[in-house]
Amino acid sequence: MSQASDFYYRLPLRAGGQRPGSHPGTSHGNGQEFVTHASLMSHPDPRRLDVRASLRDVRGEWLVRVMRQRVGVPVQLVADVSASMLFGARRSKLAVLSDLARAIGASAFRVGDAAGMVAFDTVEREDLYVPTSLSRGVGHVMAAQLENPALVEHAEAGERHRGDPVEGLLQALQRLAGRQCLVFLASDFHFPLARLDEALDTLSRAYVVPVILWDPAETEPPPANGLIALRDAETAARRTMWLRPKLREEWRDAVAARRASLQTFFSNRGLRPFWAQGAFDADAMSEYFFEANA
Image (cartoon, rainbow, N blue to C red; front, side, top):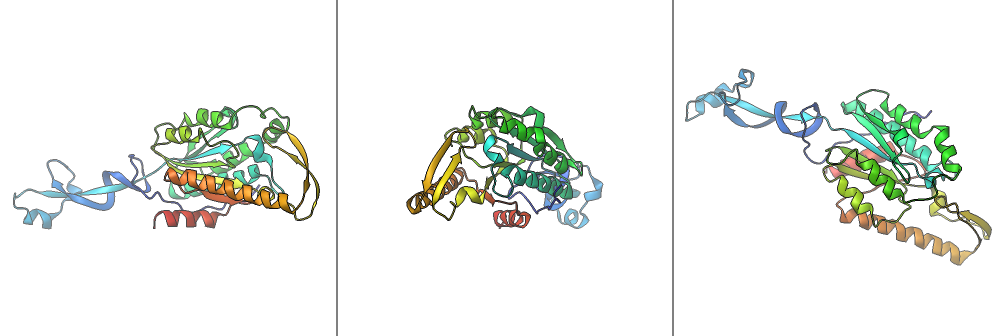
C-alpha cells in the first residue's frame, strides 16, 4: 500500500453551505471576515456588538458586526475504471489513480472536508461507490476499491470492451447533479469528446479539475525499429506493425494533436486540466491550485 501524500487545495471562488470549514463562503455566521454593520434588532447577537460604530451611528442604533464564515466543501473523485486504465509500462494508470484517491482523502481530512468517490466504465460502477465521509481513512477506502483484484480481473476478462465510457460517466454523475463540490474527474480520456460536454453540464455548480492520466509508453514510441504487436485496451483489437522512423513521427504527432485537442476542449469550458504522466505528483497538484488562486 502506497503512502498517502496530501496536497494543498482551495477553491478560487466562494462556496455556499452552512457547515464550517476552511474555504471562503457566501453565508454569514461565526467567521472572521468582516462584511458590514447591521442593527442589533435585525441580527440579535450581542457578542458582535461594535460599541465604537454604534456611537458614530447617526440613527442612534446599536450595531453589530456581520461576519462571513468559512465553509466546508465536499470533495468527489470521479474515477474512470475502463479497460484502458489497466495499461502502464511500470505501473498501470489504475494504480496511479489509486495514489490520487489516497492523496484526495488525506488532503480533504486535513482541512476538514468530506471526500467520496463515484466510478464508471461503460456503466456506473455502483460496486465501487464510496459515499462522502469525514473519516481519516476515506482515501484508503477509495484506493482499496480501485486496487481490488476483482476489478482488474473483470477488465482483463474483456467484459468491458463494449459500450461508451461517456455513457457510464453520465450515469455516475447523476449522483452529483446540481451539487456544489470540488470534483476531480480522473481519466485517460481515450474516448470521443463529443458527449463529454453533456457530462460536464451535469457539474455546472461544481468546481471541476480534469486529471488526465497518461502513461509514458503511450506517448513515446519504442526507440528501436522492428515488428511490434499492438492491442487496443478498450476494444481488445490487435494489430501488428513495423515500427520505423516515419511511424514513430506519426505516433508523436498523434499524441501532440490529442493533447492539444484536450487542452482546447477544457479551455473552452473554462477548465484547466492537470496532467499526470506515469505517476501522481502531490506537489504539482498543490502548485496547480496556487496558480488557480493567483
